[in-house]
Image (tube, rainbow, N blue to C red; front, side, top):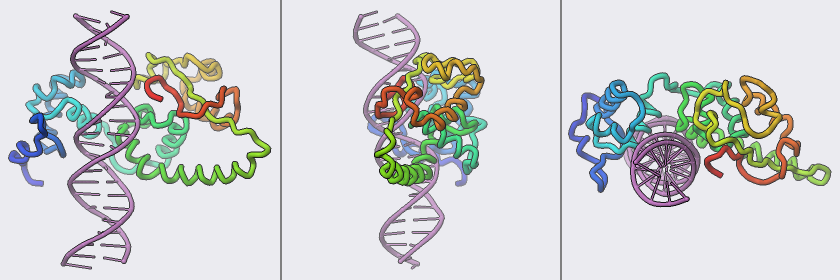
Amino acid sequence: MGGFDVEALSLMEGSSGVRKGAWSQLEDKLLRDCVHLYGEGKWHLVPQRAGLNRCRKSCRLRWLNYLKPNIKRGDFSEDEVDLMIRLHKLLGNRWSLIAGRLPGRTSNDVKNFWNTNLRRKVLSHNKENVKESETTRKTHQVIKPVPRVLPKASSLLQGKSMSSFKVGVGEAVSSSGSENWWETLLDEKEENINNSTCFPGGKVGAIELGRRT
DNA sequence: AACCTACCCAACCGCTCGCTG
DNA sequence: CCAGCGAGCGGTTGGGTAGGT
């Protein structure tokens, strides 16, 4: 890669005239300068301000997943993987929430890592569990997880600090008074994975956190 | 060396949510 | 209350590349 490929800037334009595809160094520089100058947010204004022929979404994603300072690159540590698995058990495919507990990691990173590395691992692990559970089904009633509904306006859902966050449902959680309530929740869930008081109703599905099902 | 396959990761797309007038 | 708009999210796609034959 030597120098900016100005010609490439005019290529790969969509039908709307907006450029698509990989970002050039020049585009990265323009976007970085723009965010430094105006700060994050107002993404609809960014293409104009930065002089980029990109859609707002593309700009935002590029910044969040690649250009933002303090983004951690490289392999996930064992601790991170362990935490990711536990959080995924708890939260399901809430990549942004999971990424929020992994400093320097983006939701895209987490999602990609999960899909390429962990999904298979977990699936095979689950298969083993299914085999095992089939042998014990006669004596143990299987109680499946039920959506845990959290307040929509909660800081958890907005990626804000957890320290001031109080969960609105599940007395066991809110009454714990723990700063790291979610860690408690992880332990609690592992311990009570088959406890109906923790997961009442036995409804099948991902854990509800407000936005999606 | 050439081809094929699987994998990784950046980027796009479509949808939902929250805010505002 | 409702429509319009911007922001954010998760699912999916596609290009690049490493490894195998």
